[in-house]
Image 1 (cartoon, helix red, strand yellow):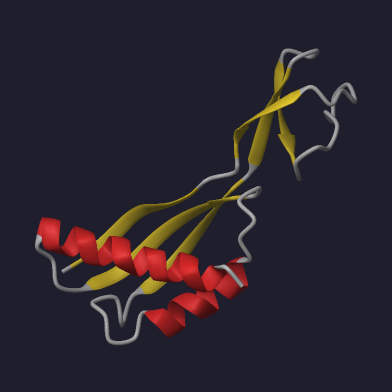
Image 2 (image 1 turned 135 degrees about the horizontal axis):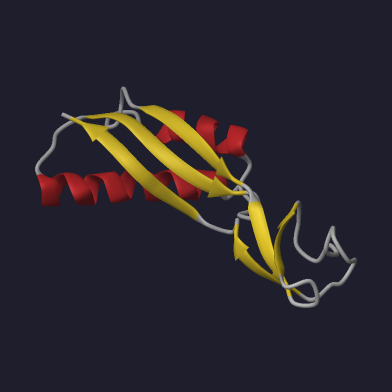
Length: 113
């Protein structure tokens, strides 16, 4: 369950930013997670609830923004949506796809006091 370490990483980023930007409480964390990121959203939400105790994010809400996966199909010359890596192009069936979006996970925004 690597979601626990991901949640701990989120708290570390929040603590680092609180020192840099001088805030003392986090109300909301907006997190973008790509479809290919390999993150179980429910497990991450559970882990975040566990690791935020006794931190400046203790009362924070976690808002997940799921990013669809897209790839550039070389034969089609089109951007196509994919559900997982190594699947064929939904337009032409080619496997010559270059993933351009959907493997990221990042904190998009923090609402703080």
